[in-house]
Length: 110
Image 1 (tube, rainbow, N blue to C red):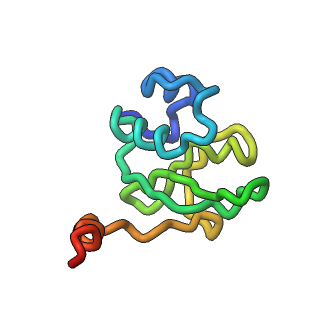
Image 2 (image 1 turned 60 degrees about the horizontal axis):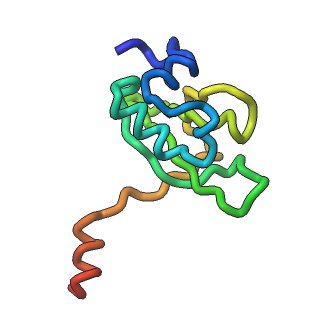
Image 3 (image 1 turned 135 degrees about the vertical axis):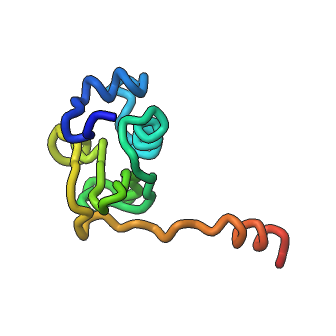
């Protein structure tokens, strides 16, 4: 696997098979596709982006790398065209991981 820092946006588009014009508002799908196709070794994080100020819907997803840095393939959509690789700053607010057993137990009335 090539280091994610050296992968271009065009290479990501080719690897995941999703054209760039379909990326906006699909951050979870793009990040998941990057993980699935082996472009990056990390886990999907869902939360909200505090840098999104043009809408009340700040839901956002990104990838957390094993070393703690993040990869945000759609940061460019909200700011400037680039893929953020670096610190998970205060503008990224992760939701706690969901507990599937708790969800099932709640549905079953336990």
